[in-house]
Amino acid sequence: LTAGAGHMQQRAPALRSRRATPVRAGWLFVLLAALEARLAGAHDFCRSRERRLSPARHNGSLDHVHVAFSTDASNFAGLLIAMISLAKHLASPGRCSIHLLVPTVDLLAARQLAGCLRRELRALPARPAVALHGLRPLPFPLTFYQLPLAIYWTRIFLHEYLPTAPRVIWLDHDVVVRADLAELYVMRMEHALAGAPEFIPPHFVRPMTFRDHIRECPHVARYAGGFMDAATFNTGVLLLDLDRWRSGDFTKSVTEWAVLTNGCFLDQLALNLAFGGRLDILDWRWNWRPNASLPTPVECLREVRVFHWNTYPNLKYWMSCISGTQTGDEHVWRPFAAWQDCEVVDPKATCL
Figure (cartoon, rainbow, N blue to C red):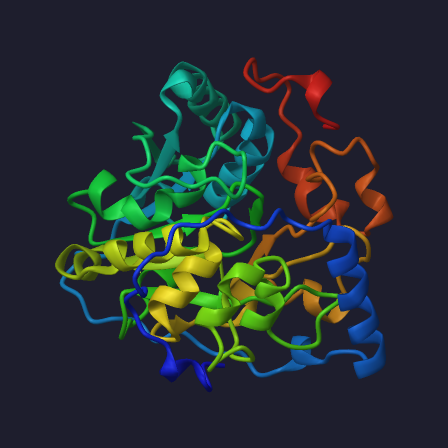
């Protein structure tokens, strides 16, 4: 999956000031991908042999699992679903800390959300601890997307937010967990980062490449000429060795690429350029990317460890007010959305 990526440089070239090209409509990208999949035939990687995780040797330092999320109050419905599914699949939920990194204006609401989580998990013999962290301003300027950008770049600063944690699992807020993440947390790592290839089923029959990214980021093309067809990884489910991050210059490298790419594809393109294929590859089952337009194939459903929704350019399932049964995947997230009341989740803004 990293063939051809070895030619990449970890450090970004010197920055030349310029304005980025606006993002083109996502529908064209989706339609082209669907046509490509139809011409290539049905993928069969769901039937592939699983890439098993080998446990790391440790003296108990990895017994406590750290998991981090970052979002704002507008996505608390999806975040609550993600946290409930995570906690209910832990064999030892009391040995887990969930870190919520939110804008400072949302800290009070996040505290209330943690209370909702405790109520939903009251039947468990133990519950994960929840720690709140206020987001700091980004130390670099970006203008490509008019978004609250700090949320999307938090993962490259986790070693600063969690100064004593040896590792952390990063999850985007639009995931549903169906396995014990402790297995992922203790895997043997050779690099500072572990992630899964960017597959977008059912459209793609191959990993997403730099060429795919650059369709929306043409100003980056000149920096990826030697590895345009190298596979990329998705940043929505990651395992970070924070001890390695503290001793290396990974954050500096990613931020240099962030400015150079102007934040196109948020942090995903910058992270891929900075790491250049030097990461531990996770099996696709740890980051399955179901698409809103078609159901997940039956042969894939029973294999998935973490569902990570790819609805672009549609809204997320809890926001669209379009029945999830149209995709056939409602049964995946609906069991974790049965809370009676949570004062910080606006029922008018969701379809729950």
